Amino acid sequence: EDQVTQSPEALRLQEGESSSLNCSYTVSGLRGLFWYRQDPGKGPEFLFTLYSAGEEKEKERLKATLTKKESFLHITAPKPEDSATYLCAVRGDYKLSFGAGTTVTVRA
Amino acid sequence: EAGVAQSPRYKIIEKRQSVAFWCNPISGHATLYWYQQILGQGPKLLIQFQNNGVVDDSQLPKDRFSAERLKGVDSTLKIQPAKLEDSAVYLCASSRQDSNYGYTFGSGTRLTVV
Image 1: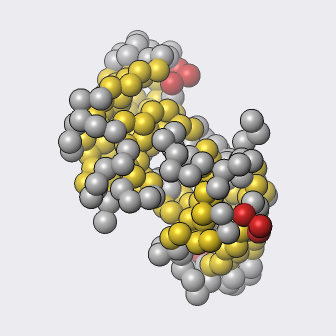
Image 2: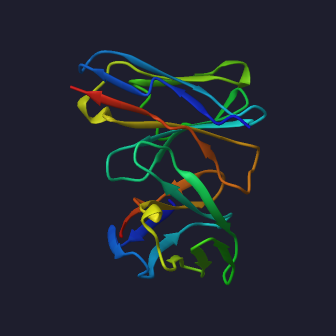
């Protein structure tokens, strides 16, 4: 069965303080690793899809990278509006399996 | 394009009562998913539809949960009878077949069973 483990569970940052979130996974036949952002009271919002080791994707202050066993979401110079829960998910055969997420709080 | 619509947004019921949730996916999305998200956890797939047919319902507690997708569009998820441990957010998502862009999620229905 596909497994996704995210760390840390929670991350408190000062505005401008860069950091990284980790997502380690086991899956038979990776067909995509996905990053989502989830705000309180809302559904997850798609950020990135990565398919192969070495691949990188960027969006504003976020950059996602992928290796054969894990993915990192780097947050560069975060702002308070980057506060959210970030979810990692992997797709094996046909379904997404999610990790528990990392809750990021950015203080001004 | 319009997003995934879900209703109601909130529901409070007593244990052993029944409840139903409704989902309208994005137009043209053949695949529809129901996920359960318990507080502090990631979403867990309950059931996946491809058009009218069920692709995966292996994690659906079939003794109390049921779901249907009408004419390959709207879907309803029902719980009867509800248990305390069913308290969670129920998320509906949809995607084009074999989407490379992940799924589009609705805002969910927050269920509290007391």
